[in-house]
Image (cartoon, rainbow, N blue to C red; front, side, top):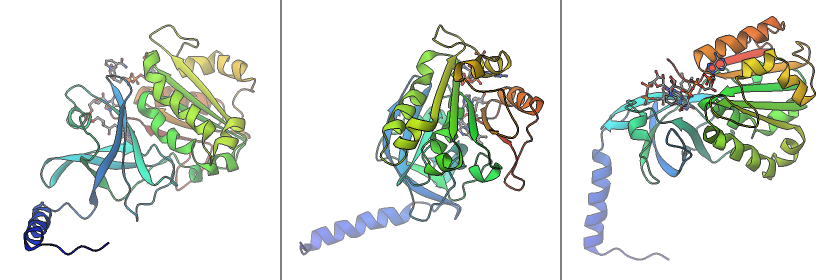
Amino acid sequence: MYTKQTPLENVMQQASLQVKDERPSLPASLTRQTVTSVHHWTDRLFHFRITRPADFRFRSGEFVMIGLELKPGKPLLRAYSIANPSWDEELEFFSIKVPNGPLTAHLQKIEPGDEVVLGRKPTGTLVLDALVPGSRLYLFSTGTGIAPFASLVRDPETYEKFDKVILTHTCRQVSELAYGLDLVAKTREDPLVGEFAADKLIHYPSVTQEPYERQGRITTLIESGQLFDELGLPPFDPAQDRIMICGSMAMLQDTKALAEKAGLTEGSNAQPAEFLIEKAFVG
Ligand SMILES: Cc1cc2nc3c(=O)[nH]c(=O)nc-3n(C[C@H](O)[C@H](O)[C@H](O)COP(=O)(O)OP(=O)(O)OC[C@H]3O[C@@H](n4cnc5c(N)ncnc54)[C@H](O)[C@@H]3O)c2cc1C
Ligand SMILES: NC(=O)c1ccc[n+]([C@@H]2O[C@H](COP(=O)([O-])OP(=O)(O)OC[C@H]3O[C@@H](n4cnc5c(N)ncnc54)[C@H](OP(=O)(O)O)[C@@H]3O)[C@@H](O)[C@H]2O)c1
């Protein structure tokens, strides 16, 4: 119902609009978005969701620049994989908390209602379009490298293109697996992709620095054949298997070497092929 404003309310509204207008403008490549939820998984890991601009389009698996205006109008930005699928109304990010990290020392304190700066141009190589057709999709991740795959395992297109989707996640500690365990459990119950995921999605977590039901680096589990034995699958086959890899530089190098040894070729957006890599962080 329309209610007429009193002169005082009118003045107050003008004043509040004035405050908004006075904020320093951002470069045209950036927008301000609002945090809608935050969940802390460990003292090193959290995820958060933000509003999504109506014109923000991305392909599942891409990353985008996000940041905080630590100085008004001059945001500090970092690359972040978009962790939700492209059909989601919001945007989700899974983040590390680096002690004294220029961005994450502050980002870890965000709360619903706070503002985050978002780039307008997502990009990246971990996209389905950059792979040639195959029947099995391996998604190899360590640490926060699971983020782009959190997007892909929730995208129906992934299950349209592949008969089996194997998501591996290796962390130092058991507690660091929690986001991935929750993701897979919820994906299997999701009204949109749950039916396909229940049938096709295999989760393969492992831990390297603590006792766990499965221990060891993913490279060791591949090389020893334990991965294939446990899944009842043949070793990598360039005719059937497609691979995406996301982790530290060292993990990328070592896992990529195993894919190449099996005869798979690295692809890109410009030249789709059999496996793809992307850094989970620099350093
Ligand atoms: C393509 C790309 C995608 C990325 N996606 C994500 C993502 O989805 N989630 C995320 O948390 N980070 C992601 N990062 C890393 C991110 O850009 C920042 O480095 C991170 O947010 C820390 O920022 P900072 O300013 O606090 O510290 P920085 O100065 O950026 O980093 C300081 C040091 O912390 C370590 N570090 C940084 N990020 C990580 C990490 N994710 N895991 C473990 N150690 C790390 C490295 O040793 C780095 O040298 C991505 C990086 C790239 C290049
Ligand atoms: N996670 C922590 O508890 C912790 C605590 C303090 C500081 N840090 C620092 O934070 C940074 C990032 O740590 P992170 O744990 O997020 O990421 P990370 O060091 O990349 O380790 C994540 C997982 O990847 C494995 N891995 C590392 N190198 C690999 C390789 N070449 N091939 C295959 N697997 C590999 C690790 O196994 P391994 O365990 O065998 O290396 C670990 O299980 C590091 O510099 C680390 O020193 C981490």
